[in-house]
Image (tube, rainbow, N blue to C red; front, side, top):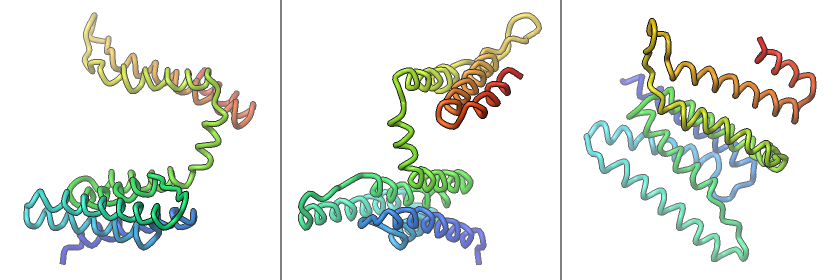
Length: 209
């Protein structure tokens, strides 16, 4: 008996329950606890079959089958209910859970657990995220875009190599420090704005230190 495979199944089962529970509490009619758990376990089984038979077509065929089922469910929903609200969140979450289940087998379990947990948290904090976005002003959005630009665009393209006198100049490390300082400043600003003056002062004090 392969206990690693049993552990993988257990992780997939738990992640499916976690995400499905969140969807169930929102009275979602498309998929709930049972559906998300089954999709997650199906992803694991697709990974097992792909690994055992070394067939690269098993995983995409099952993925496309789930996609077709979700499309059919939405079509039926539209025909039966007038003015039905057909969103994409649940469908995308279902496909992602299938991919996570497969990746638990064929990739990294740690990354699979992180992505699955992050998905559940993202779905759970939906209202808070929307409320936060609605409060943003143009200057707040500019601060976020500035941080995204220096951390996600500029930082990855800088070379992680030292040069200059005594080989002490490293562009990537220098820019990483700039990103850290800007990130703390932006973080402190939003804490000051949305949480309170005292907490914002503390975060800015950390940056000064």
